[in-house]
Amino acid sequence: MGLFERYLTLWVALAIAAGVALGTLQPGVVAEVARLEYAHVNLPVAFLIWLMIYPMMLKIEPRCIASVGRRPKGLLLTIVVNWLIKPFTMAALAVLFFRVVFASMVPADDAAHYIAGMILLGVAPCTAMVFVWSDLTKGDPAYTLVQVTVNDLILVFAFAPIAGLLLGVTDLFVPWDTLALTVAIFVVLPLAAGLITRRALHGGPGGATRVDALAARLKPFSILGLLLTVVLLFAFQADTLLQQPLRVVLIAVPLLIQSYGIFAISYLAAKLLKLEHRVAAPAAMIGTSNFFELAVAVAISLFGISSGAALATVVGVLIEVPVMLSLVKFANRTRHWFPPPPDAPASAKEALGSAS
Image 1: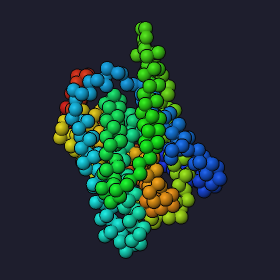
Image 2: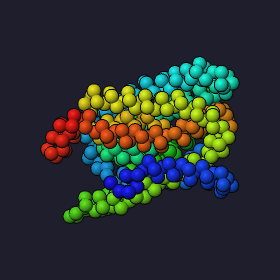
Image 3: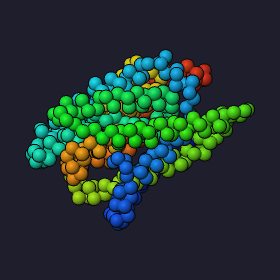
Image 4: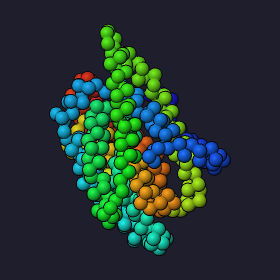
């Protein structure tokens, strides 16, 4: 494990501090960078996330994608958690905290907006960053790709009806350009680039070694992309953090409970289903993290850029990386809870067996 990966939590903490400092000291520069967007997708952030994902796509072999159908339990787990559990637990937690627990601390109109923003986060499971979390837990890249792809297909049809039902909005506007652009940038393009690169390097003797060597050389750039993404996200929201710290904390409380709760449900179910860890960890990560570009875009279009709903989706963005890193650590420490993959060396299987 490299220096960056060993102390990743420390680097992320420093990146958060650097982002807040940058947003405070150079607000004009940050505003210019924030304006570089198309269809509510910030292009510099999109490039950095693409930089993170591309090395992971190099590991995907086309024949491994086809084999996912023979192991459907992880895929079914993802679908059930993302679409039959997560939206409704988020709505319930949002109402509980802002209609009951925090009712005396927040005006009713603001509370309604915060609830709406959290509902939008709950109906928008992750598309892009899950590849990063999967890689950090040594997840199966081909299986993760299929999980994300199926998730995106369901998202196209299920997002508007479920969000509309929970929000009580019958004419919910879905920014299809945002949805299409993010899927293209974060799934289709890096996958195509990875497959093309793999095919170019794989020919002749030593092809697999060349692919692995390239992925290893690009790994530091992937971690750098993650850190720079954190810097930008926190720089964009520095004013919010400094001007409304109490509101940010209040919104973060149910979001944190939701995140850890959904992970616990997914991870425990994966253990009961006896999934391999390389499938179980990404399956739990997909439901835990959020498709924040979509949630932010819908919140802005429905309620306005300065609304409480938009603020709630932004808080979701701010807590995501620290939360997911803590879950990555937990998942890596509990690898022995799960059966080894069939292709694992006998020594590894014995080690896991004795640990469990």
